[in-house]
Image (tube, rainbow, N blue to C red; front, side, top):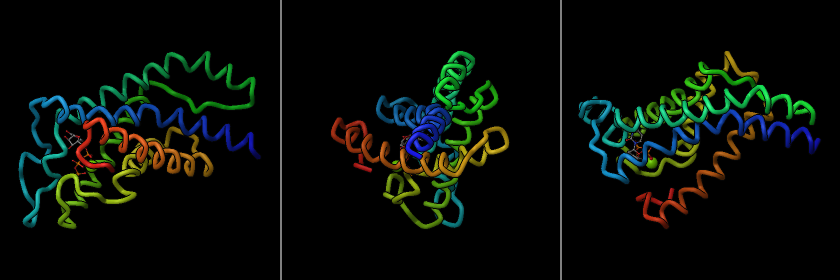
Length: 184
Ligand code: CTP
Ligand code: MG
């Protein structure tokens, strides 16, 4: 049982590593003051912004590129790493260029869709939307990759648990380092 939990944890992390890169890199747009353009072109829908100023083309591009690079690195390592993992009874989910792209792209689409709903609820950019702010991108990853990745229930549960914990930890550190404006 313990071994199964560990194996599923590794499988979950393998899939989410590119998504973490995708989720993390867009924040550099603000941190480094990169000139950026909102995805909704500043347009509103029923009185509120469609996505808001927190979702930019530059952030999306940077995030997808960063996540794709991580995914490509995993693609290159896959043949040898999966052999190695197999010796210990862990079957790594397959990684290839398509999945390496769909993971970060799905992650940021999940983030974008969440912002759409935040704006519909009248929430300001950056306002805390507990659980959804932390977990939006997993839903995006699952939606875009379920046809290609052999997900198991335990693996998906791990994806949510580990992301919530990593996100909370990283946000608190990022806030302390003044990279993030809010501690969530
Ligand atoms: N960001 C971006 N483009 C994206 C996603 C994020 O430029 N597609 C940058 C923005 O500067 C954003 C920051 O990363 O403010 C943090 O991202 P996030 O927390 O997802 O956005 P919020 O500012 O909290 O906006 P929202 O309320 O819509 O979630
Ligand atoms: Mg936020």
